[in-house]
Length: 450
Image (cartoon, rainbow, N blue to C red):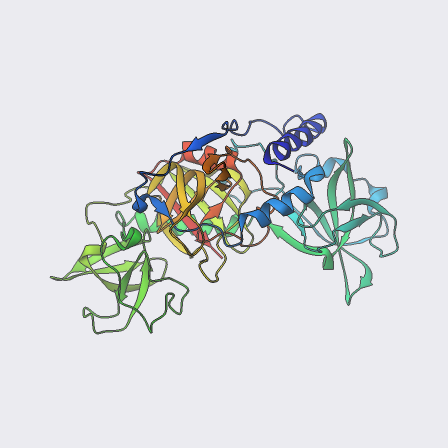
């Protein structure tokens, strides 16, 4: 199935969802770019990023095509409590009711609503899919079949029949036809996930408190433009998971002969003092101070105040965007995302607080392990090294010896499942476009938590 058909199916399912809840669709995804010939003859190799896909993109497209008829599961938090009745919950031991409220200090001002997600959801990880049960029992009637890597909204965690040494079941909300229904999935079928707003809020508050003591500088060594750091035990990655490329050496003492670790491009630091060769810096992400050679920090470039911040949750594979307001934080968007996979020619998205450095409406990336251009990613915000928040990657097609741009792609079924990217943070293209237009680079930051 080609990508245009995939996009068409997406719109059909969205239309059906809108029939149940007219708040589900508020925005439209980017208009698909017509196919056109691409001239790559005069491209500067310095403008091409490393490969951004942990797995071959075709694998993500294959998984998307398999479930094309059920591209969008329903996650409506607004209707979730309206379908519950006393009769439906009788005889079931409820262990936890899932809340859709925000912590105190975060106001709801969500502006991106193309995918109306719930704050708590269940990811189906059984490769054969799963049949949602009428009751929390293995032999109960199946009322809806779910595909591998689909997500359904969580209503309750309950006790039910013991299966595979566990009696934990989840009551979930899903769309059947045009009706919202509830049923049960056993805990062995997948993973319960949530938007961890408390942890996100704490991470932003920590950064705001750091900024209250003065502006923060940041490490600058994109593509080692300011010099390759020394090798640490001949490894590309140090013991903390930070790679040498795009990084600076952070020495324990003001001497290049002392112990050091890598400190990545874009990470925020506070200059405490300086010597002839080093800036003595405090790194909030590491909670320690180090000595960094001066060529890796531009003293005149700072984050002086924070207005826009995206928090990426590497563990849950989701993210949220906030504006800093007088009385706390304002939630602007929340969505699923996919972070980096560590492996050969692939790197995980590193933890930390980073400056939002630059925007590109699209950037080219290379084929894995080569310098050959493979494709591009749209609506990108770079925050560290070659890592961007961006839309669905696009691979160029080969036709009659020419490279063809097939146009933007909105959706991949694998977004919000497991790390599948390389360093970058993959979003639905419509959300990447939203962030691209919303982010204030002067006063913006990106925080990655675990």
